[in-house]
Length: 302
Ligand code: TRP
Image (cartoon, rainbow, N blue to C red; front, side):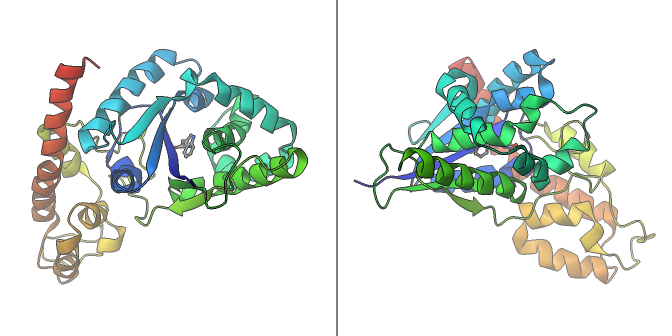
């Protein structure tokens, strides 16, 4: 019988935030109803940037599992696994590395842009797309049957890695015989949620709302968030598209985002009121997640 599998992963470099929720988790929760799902806690890949902060990776893995459970990923339906606990992944990436050209890694646009933030270029970092190919292709049923599907739901930034994984699968099959299913990419429909300062959302930039943030933390963060600097008074016309708050409305309350957009443009709503309403919406959304997280933390001793 043919298999329909999903494999995706998240680096364990901190607790998860709203960007993860709208870019990935929300999709995964839906997909687990239809597919055999595998969700990877990529702690080895986390080492590429955190090799000298191992304790952080370990505590993050716990936080990420709590977040998975709190948002409704269900271990009865989906398999969560820790990359370092499956040594076959490391082994497979070694073999893949033998026929992966350096040029391909150097030209990968995601790797290129991530390298800008790094002082030194490490061998392990350059090879992470190879290791990611192993993460994905290990979930082939060997030998593959016609009709087998391996789908990888990811954000836009991961698309080059998936292209490279498909290449790896094809090349391996060509050299050693039909072994791996060629995986398909499911790109998240939701555009990447920016940080509260409109830059790329990340823990280190201190511009993210975490799923575990308290109501007060959410309030403080939203109050400080970036809005249209040209909207000087509450009743001056604003430009919602350059405003972080508007992006969060689109994610958290898509039904009222249109109404907010028009009211802001017409100068009918000021940024303070706009933020107040978003604080309530965000906290309403996060409250059940926080409660489940607290309960699970007690019961499962994670
Ligand atoms: N690179 C992904 C990220 O930064 C994490 C990841 C590791 C992954 N292995 C994967 C994603 C396999 C999809 C499939 O979030």
